[in-house]
Image 1 (cartoon, chains in turn orange, blue):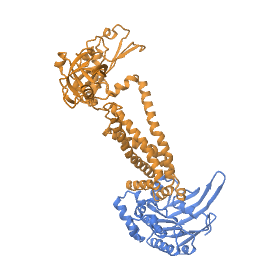
Image 2 (image 1 turned 30 degrees about the vertical axis):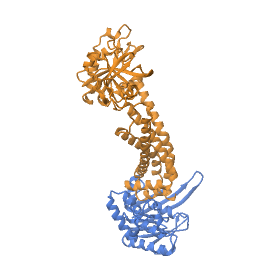
Image 3 (image 1 turned 135 degrees about the vertical axis):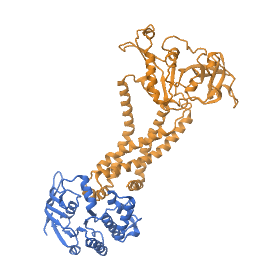
Image 4 (image 1 turned 60 degrees about the vertical axis):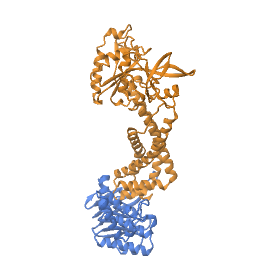
Length: 414
Length: 220
């Protein structure tokens, strides 16, 4: 039965090449855009280099202090001390890394200024993240204890600063803000869209200007808590919440009017969402807007396709009459047209996949996003297939329903 | 086998009401070969459509094998058409995008039969109408007579008890028309009940019984 439907769908496509071109063009363009958007969202939120372990990671990135009426608040990253005391000590975690948000600095090569993004981290940062060392090795606890002036730099900075012609730069010195640091390792850089790992230079947190000893709850640091397994995440969260609940009121107030402290260990996407949608109502609004945008992107071309499909199927009134006369129930015809439409959508989807792949390659190589690694990986592919199915259903159900309801005698007269 | 009681069909538009069938009473027995005759527009095809459950009467009752069909659901009616009825149309109504054998298989698609079973039955039906050598052809590659034989194969593939033929020879020359009629006669001899709409008096005379219509009314 399925092959019969697909044979028909294929023949119908060949019947009017121009019509088919218009239909497929619309489907392809819509799906290609959706695939590229999906790939970009996957790039932003998926587990990718060097945050390959996002699936079992929790982010402690915001400390919020408010008064009990929620009228005034102070929000920002955590202090090194808070994270060391309450995150680093988590017993249920596999490892906890602490790193600063990136800040800016300058270095000079032959009188030419190079703007740098810098980050201070602990040694576990290199364990929790999946940085690839092209040269050398990461700094360790000994380097940190000794306050060694060592740095890990990215390959892009290496090429820019040392103009090394393929020779190793490990052991060479780099001057940043008038201090000389020894390069201990070179990593493949992280894209700037992964803010907690992105930097040009990584310093041990005991390096100058890290401010790791600042007092208070807020500072410039973030922690990534790595679970042994994703299933451990709830127990880690409750342990962390329990740790936070032990912080005393004088510590929270810290000279202000605040008496409520909110610090959460959250999966990356939840953390991202919470930065701008803090209340449940905000989240509902966010998801509603996202659904509306998706519906617009998919719905408008689908409505257009509905019209094309109706006129296309109307041509086949006689076929509908014949099938009904020989025993096809309306439901079977409904499915026939839906399957045909999904088949056509998947042809468009294949073209869209090719276009999306080429567009993504172009984006990756264009340099718009440094170290961009957009891909059509398995999750993106599966989502693309689901998008194709939804689009096929969206544009096929209404015409199919209308046609399946045609009266047989009238359909046969057409 | 088929019983129509006081059947009436009215077509309504916003301004006009047309009485297409008026008080039709008809009883077709198992194994009969009945022809319906009458001038153009007298309601022959409408009557055949109603007998074949392709259209619903405005009034009156239809019984198939003693069961009144007016309360049947779409699914039940479809099943009845699929199992009991086979249709042959004047303009063949073959699906041009499908090969001859795929066209013949259509009624079997809506039964729980395997692909292999469908193919075997379709081949058998095409052999009966002498077209087993044209299975892979498409309708556009066939003559009118061949198309009608494919349509007959499609009508008989599911081994229905009743065949309803709407002017099956209307688009054919007399030699081809006779050939089609002899196929129908053979099917009738094998036990299939046939109701045929025709314009051709000579054809009608070769059937068991003639029902004559005039302006939607049964006159014979």
